[in-house]
Image (cartoon, rainbow, N blue to C red; front, side, top):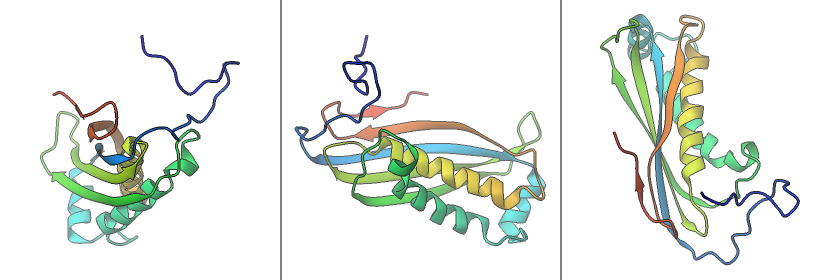
Length: 164
């Protein structure tokens, strides 16, 4: 069983000391999926959402989210991000629940002593929540699901790639 590193001798939360860790290039990719009505996706694609260009705003929000991760997640270290990229994959085919989807993929990169998994996951989630916020007036039934780490590289623990 893995040892929990974010607790001190008294069992209280602490920020892990990373001062002895080697600086390496670190890359992480995460995703989140927004499920929405086909009419909502069509309005996004045609630029007919009253609040503006949904995906452009979500892209900027995702980058901002990555940069704010240590302000949101208490034990995350502030790190110098060298790159954050957000991509969208629109699937107009409704699934069994009659919803289509937009999958957000966020990739974060740094060179340093700690990884960027949380920054990538925060970026994907904030972009997804921004889509919800911008479209809620026309589709309150949207949902954000399938937030997950797809891959990470760098550091002592090496490479991880999600299966399936």
